Image 1 (tube, rainbow over the protein chains, first blue to last red):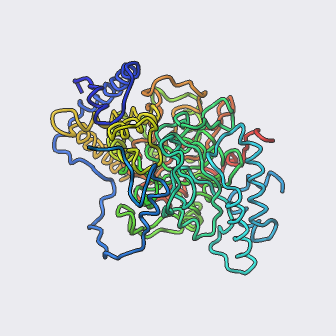
Image 2 (image 1 turned 60 degrees about the horizontal axis):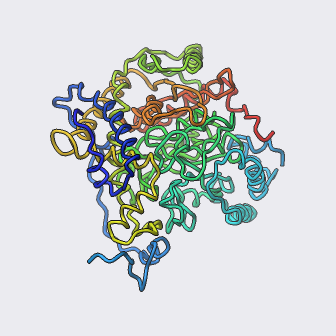
Image 3 (image 1 turned 90 degrees about the vertical axis):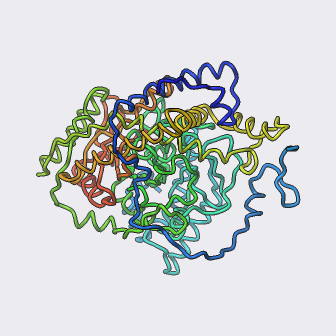
Length: 94
Length: 491
């Protein structure tokens, strides 16, 4: 991992804001981790299949589609920061 | 009720209920009283609904009087890490962003505990979103190690381990993504098991690293974790990655395996630089114990150990950055009061709601997914290394039944002692490879340091062979009295 992390770009991807002081600290910590992780580059993985999941089922998991009761609106209302007439309220988009 | 009772292993608590020496309500009340007395010091709980807990205990007593118990463990209290959905109860993941969240449904593990009639006893503190190994990343409080309240209890299932160690609870559930059940169990001197990936449904457990997350059990003894494991394991249509395998009766298997002689592998890489000398001594003494019992001890190599941390942090953070994208200020309780635009709703809610460690891991995850020679190059590379780690273990298991290692390189350290995030990550060295390979692992107490802090022994098993793992662990427990030692706190 030769390139250094572009903290501004990553913050944008993450949808998280950082103060200038925080940026300096996070940049350094990130760089330490990236430096440490770069030891993987030395490993020869030519021809190695990535292991995406350790639990490789013998076959696919199939199931019938069965309708079940789910009061989605009630579930949302319990935890959404703001709702009105069954709708989620968000700041104006346009 | 005598406080000694609160430290009894699960089978003796069950016997106490069956012999009517105490009721579930009496037992639960006694745990509540002790918890109230110790909590100002231990800080293991994030929330506790006393009325609900006692209601569940009384319902169990009623079932008992009518002869319709739901299971052997009906009426036994168990704590839940604050990451499991329990309908109508808070679920904060120790994060400000979920501070006021209430679970609208039960996770599958909670469903199974309820079906067994167990008393769900409080919500346990943790590192925020299970990211950490000390509880220092909790947005609300730092849990103390009952053996020395100046020390960390380990984590991320910090409250679960500390409460069991302190006798506030007989049992607790945790989750383990890279060691979060095994490491706090080791540091608090209790038993903690993470079964094979896929054994327990993840439905209703807040996600961190989906290809690694697995629920686990903490208890005072090996038979305690074995009993609860049996209740929780098994296929679940709500989690396609739950294993459709038969679940053995682990307690029976342990009994059947008594006196059996196994072959244990001891990997030299796990005993090299960086391992505390007292931990090394205690773990090697355990190896000697097995040898004296007639076990075959085989030196093995697990050369990928040194790459485990790198591969783990790349994979876990990449998956976390995606899983935590859902916390956007729209659906999950916290929205910044300062947000005036949609962009501010996303970014200010996340900036104010997440703690530093969570932000750091999201950034690292996004970095490894977006940098390198091609998209997700580092993630891909780490997954290839993960295959090598898996192969390393598979090769070793051709000639051994289980592998013996330390759980943590040191006993519990002082709160605040580790200064950089990297130094904290490195303390996961012995547990993350097991998670990468999806293997079952258990930590059991195997000694104490000179300063009276517990030391943990990790046993690693073949996929879906928890029975052997538990049997080997129990053989050690039988030969030693570590499980019966209690911290002085509260006495």
